[in-house]
Image (cartoon, rainbow over all chains, first blue to last red; front, side, top):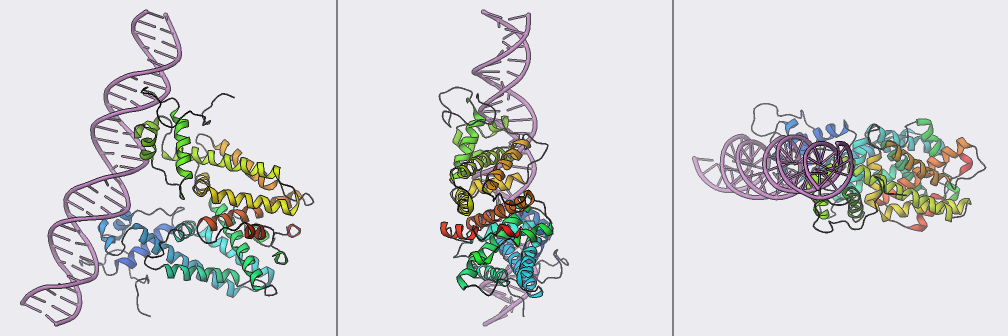
Length: 205
Length: 205
DNA sequence: TCACTATGTTTATGATGTTAACATGAATGC
DNA sequence: GCATTCATGTTAACATCATAAACATAGTGA
């Protein structure tokens, strides 16, 4: 697989030697932006500060992103891919049944707690993406993957429609719990998360 | 009850006659800010724009709020009070049992859908309030009230500890569902909300 | 070699939050 | 009743931000 516009495989974030051109500023910007955001609680990112970190002029980023929102969208997409992959992997490594279901929810919440700004950025941005813009498809795909991961540990002995409702229930539950924790309303506690998630009764769909 | 610093009873938002002083700029700012925010999807508020609406200079607001965050905190507090009151009223007017429980959840989600920016502002701000600041107590009180409203329709035949878990479950569920709707991930549907909320099984605490 | 394009740079613009210095209305003390 | 003081406005100024415009250079392909 060769590097496409969305890959973020670069050697370093800052300009290497004194070369005039940067190499792959777009990828470097995404990588540096991801790192910067992931060190914060809130997804605040300044174009100028980022450019400074990259050793590049403030306006250079406009050669790769039409505006700040586009950069944030790219970061949100990258974050969403990471979350989806993380969730899918968890679904695979965890057994089924109610225990596995609780574990999946815990995984979602834990990821959110470990990447608060990224989590916020994802949901901040996906609601705003202009569907005519660069890659709404990728966003949709990534979310589809996330939902699939969530639905993976759903009980099989209920109808598809019930499964959809149950999946929404599960997603709402862990998402709400994660948000309440990120917003400082609830203290993170793995046991509590499991207990709360397992209160769902699938026979009530 | 006479007007204290947090009341918002004013005659009009803009300056009345040519008087030099405004009357009650603090209250007017909160009222105008609330209205402005409630007309939006996201809690973006510019100090200068707000001052313009009030017919007042941009820096005038600094006589009543140390900075923008303090104004936003005041707005969030007002919003939280409204949400809490709304929720408490719903708890009172709705019967108990599972049906009442579902109705309470629906009330929370519907309020969020009707006041998206306010909802976001509340949870944006309460996580950031400096506990040494103006009125952390009021914030805490207001949230306590909200939680009480949520817990009001909790089943009585379970232990207090189970009730706490169940309340957190309920809060997480409706909050997450509301947020997913606000973020455009789920379409609002009253029946669906009720169905999702009613999947909770309190015997599993 | 010569144009062309991609990707940088510098400079400039208008918006924002915030501070400082100043002005005036209303309230207070004599 | 008058002078002083305090609360609450004002204007001017500053730093920062996103962004646009004009210019410059590095790499590419004819």
